[in-house]
Amino acid sequence: MIPYQQQTFLFLRIHCTLSLLLLLAVSGCSTTRHKERADAEVYDIITAKSAAVPGAGPEFSIEPPDDAFDLDGLTVLTEIDERLGDGVASEAGSAVVALDDALMLATQRNRTYLSEKESLYLQALALTLERHRYTPIFSGGASGAVRRSAGDQPTPSVFNEAMAGAGAVISQLEQMTGTQAELLRAYANVVEEAGASVGLDQPRTRLVEERRVAGDMTLGADVLMRGGGRIAAALTTDFLRFLTGAPRTSSGSAFTLAVSQPLLRGAGAAIAAERLTQAERDALYALRGFTHYRKEFTVNVSANYYSVLQQRDIVRNTWSGLENFRMNVERERAFAEEGLRTQAELGRMLQAQLDNENRYINAVRRYQEELDNFKIMLGLSTDARVVLDDDALTALREQGLDHPTVNPEDAAAIALAARLDLYNDRDRVNDAERRVRVAANALQPRLNLLGDATVATSGDNNPERFDFNRMDWSVGFDVDPMFDKKAERNAYRAALIDLERAARRAALAEDTVKLEVRAAWRNLEQARRNYDVAMESVRLSERRVEEQHLLAELGQATAQDQVDAQNDLIQSQNNLTSALIAHTIARLGFWRDMGILYIGEDGLWKETPLEPSSEPGL
Image (cartoon, rainbow, N blue to C red; front, side, top):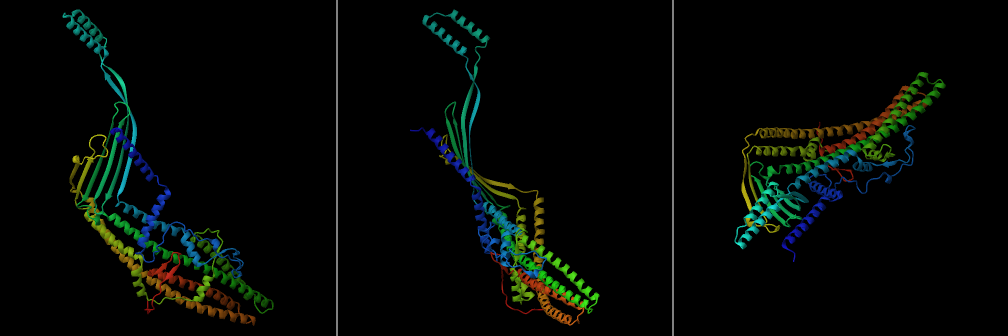
């Protein structure tokens, strides 16, 4: 049967080995596993909080989607649009990007958009750490070492032992013979004195080496309570075994439990858990902010998309006008050769042709620049061969104006109830109020209830046998009257000022929202009126150009009238396109500023229809 000491030592070796392997396994988890756990925690938080944020999509991920949008799947332009003129390089072979495709590309590749998503992720990631602080936090460690020590050990002199033996022999002879052995004793004394004179009676030292195995293992748990209390428990096991020297083994364990609970300063969930409360609200604010940003981002992408199409249309209109000017110049040159036109009139037409050629060159340059800038907005390289879909502009023209009939007062009321950024400003007033209460609590003295207990094993080599009869415990208070409260006083006063500021910011935010909604409504009205004016202007300009063509055929048109009519037609056509696009963007901006422009997972917007209402004056 194995002796008890060996059983104990074997138990400790196995126990420590398993614990060490467990610690190494936990700490050595793959980085991929850590990343997956972080993602799962963050996505659960965002999904849970999305229920409280209208328009926030439940699906959120900062990872590239498995079905990432690819330009290779788009339709390729095969025909050359000759209406763009000879200043635009051939766009044949370019991928045709529709508005839906552009929004999807932008949400997957736009660098700023991805950074905003990552900011939301990081805010939720910070919340996971704050939540973790209120869960049991385990700790552990193990250590082991082989130690060698050496030291001098004194040993009695052999000479002293020999002289003591000689004295004993002389005494025995005296007892056996019954006579005194004075001569022998005298000789012994002489020898002893001679040995002492040369140091034979001094003790000797020798080097003694000792080796031992020492090890310990600690497992602990720490729990922070919502009310500010803290519970900590720890189990420690130590063992020591000598490999050389006196063979022995020593081992023991101790269990410690400590509790602390604030009673005044820092007491209560409203005070102690302020960091967690604020982290929860910050994550909600970040989600609201990102949801509102998605609305702004969609409007911006759409505005830039239509702006490129508008500039492309300007190129067409300018080229068409330039062609008409060239035709008119040829006709006027023929008339001049026949003496029906003066050289001054021909020169005026030639000058107008040169001016339009210059406008065409500038229009082409602006179109190419805007297209390159839009590629960057989509997260594409400027070398990417893409062209925007003209059908989007055609669809707008066929649809005409989709003008909301909501009045500005109702729109402002809706915005006050729906704007997510406004909710953040209002809730930050509550945050400031909480911080005032926390700062006021910090002015109280510190009074903590403390308790601890320690139980150790009985005797040596009993690492699992705790002796509760010999438990050490204590209960008491930790008091700090806080005589110096200057820092706390200043923090409290600063918190009161922050509360006033937060209230003013919330009031300003409400007024700003009203201002933005009314401005958006005015922009929408202006865009509608501009569109009506542009429509009438195009009709008038087209009639003037037709009239000048007929007069020119009859030789009755003047160069000035032809130039003016053609320039006005080009300008009115550009104004009509601009007004149509401006109204479309103004309508999206109006829904956005009201807070009711909802964005789907694909980045497309969803407008909320409103009931018609009267339109009061501005």
